[in-house]
Length: 168
Image (cartoon, rainbow, N blue to C red; front, side, top):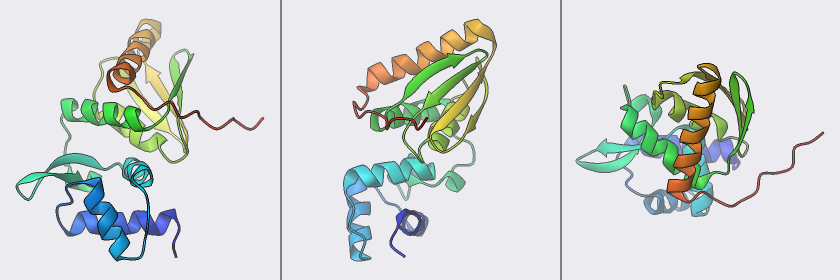
């Protein structure tokens, strides 16, 4: 077993075993187990697993969602900003929903971060593999959430990687 599911399970095990403080450290630990991956793949895997940055073992480290009882809204907003840095995002409106498209496997991490950020105009999210429906509080709320996401992307200088074309 050497696919993404196996690699992500190894990442879960490594993060559960003790503090992992950087993607480089994670990359080295995976290599020791025969899994050679680049930093971009690790970044996508961390996003797909819903991993957050926090404190563990006396310093900053990656945390699995189960390790975080209740993420403060500010930490979730910072995580959302980091995700939007690493992942492409298309935003479209279908009132009362925003429809967000990203790369396959990343929608859940973005939706979870948006939920935890507790934006006043977000009622909730539903995530698939690459698509997120964001239920907003009315048309004005939809505009505020769209502006919020756009501002986060602008602050974080998001990836310019284009999304794959949608099949008809």
